[in-house]
Length: 598
Image (cartoon, rainbow, N blue to C red; front, top):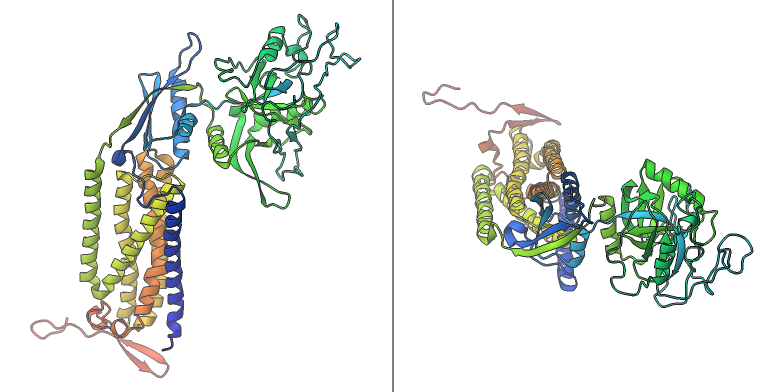
C-alpha cells in the first residue's frame, strides 16, 4: 500500500530521531566494551562516597601562609577540580592553614598532582646548557674566554650539537606552525645518555670574582662561581636531584629539563605565569589548516606579558647559542627551551614537547586557572562513606516515578488517547537523558548527585508543559472548526513560539545558575539545562511528527470521542461550506433546565 505523501515528512523526522537514539546507545556500547565507559551513570559524592584529601602548605623556614593566600589557593583548586567535569567535589579550608578537597570516587595520582601542584610557569633566558649527565666541560684560557676564540666572548661548544626547539614566530604568522607569533616548534630534548648537546658556553667557565654588574638577565655576569660549580656537579639522571631546590624568581637557577636529558643555568624570571591570559591544548595545525599529530599548548599573554615577552625575544635573537634560547620552566623544571629566531610582538605563543593530548590539557587547565600561591603536600588521604546513600537515591527515584504516574493520569483524563503521546514522549526523553548522562560521565566525568536527580524530576514537569501547550493549541484550532490535519499544522506553528520561549527561559536560568554556582548546585543546573534541550528535541522530532501521523488515522482524524479531539466534546463551531469559502456558525447554545437558552 502506498504511503500517504502527507506522512512522508513525519516518518523521515521520526526515523532521524530513531537513528540518533540508536547511534548514542551504540556509542555507549562501544565505549563500555573497548573504553572505560559504564552503562550506569556515575554517582556523586553524596550517593557513592569518595576520597577526602587534606593538603598542607609547603613553606620555607619560618614563613607562614596568609588567609589571602589560602583563599586564593582554594579558589584556584575549585576551578581545577571543576575543569575535570561536573563531579560535585567540595573544596574548603580548615584551621586557617589547610585545604580539604573531597571528591567522589578514587582520584588517580595525576588528578591529585594537578590539584595540589603550584604549576608556577616562568620564562627564563638560558645562560648555559649541557647534557643532563655529568661530562667534561671545556677548559678556559687564563683570560676566562673559551678555547678556540680570540675574542672576549666565551663560546666553547661540545663536539656535537643537538637540534633544539626553534621559535619562528613573528608578530604576523608563523609559516611552520600556522599560528600568529608561534613561539615553539615540536622538538624534544635529546634522550638521556646521548652525545652531549650544546655545551655550557660561558656559564660554567665564566671567570669568578668579576665586579661587573649584569646588564640584563642574559648577561654572563649573572653566573657566579657557586652556580658554575653546581652546574658542573648536577646529574639530572639521579632521582630526587632537584628536591629542595630554591626557585627565587629574582635570581639565576640551575635546573634540569623535565625528562632529565638536559641541564641549564638560567637567568632570572622575565615573564611570569600570572601574565598568561589563556592556555588551550590541541593539535598543532599544518599549513593547510588540517591538524597534525603534534600536541601543543597555545598561550596568549595579557598586556604586560606581551610587552615583556616582546622585549626578551628582541634581545635573544641577536645572542649566540645557547643564550638565544628562552626556557619555559614549570615547578622549577624546564619544559622546553626554544631558540628565539624572531621577535614575537603580539603575545601569542605555542609550547610543544613530549606531551600527550591528556597531559597537555591538564597542564593547560593549570596554567589557565593560575598558579597556586604556595605548593601543597598531601597530608592525609581517607575514604569517606556516602552522606545520603542508596536509600536516598531510591527515594528520589520513587519521587520521579510518582511524578510520572501523576502526569500520566492527568494526561489520560484531560486528553484521552492523545495523552498516550505525552507518555511516549516522556519515555523517549527518559531514554535520551539516560544515555546522555552515561556518556557525559565517560567523556566529561559528570556525576549524578541528589541535586542532579532533583533536576531530572523537575524536567518531567517541564516536558509535560510543552505537550500541554501544543495539545491545547490543536484543540483551539479544532474548536474553531478546522479539520484535524489543518489544526495540527496551524496549532504547531502557534505553539512552537511559546515552547521555544519557555524552554529558552528555562535554559537561560540553568546556564546562569551553572556559571554562578559551585559543587552540587551546578549538578542541578546542568541536568536542568540538559533536559530542557532534550525536551525541545523531543517536541520537534517526536511529538509533532507523531501527532501529524495520528491526524491521518480514522480514530484521531475522525474525531472519535475517546481520541481527545472530538469536535463535539470540545464545543467546536459547526462549519458550512459555500462554494470555495467556509462560513463558521456559532456553536449551539446550551439549554438550561427550564428550557431557556443560556
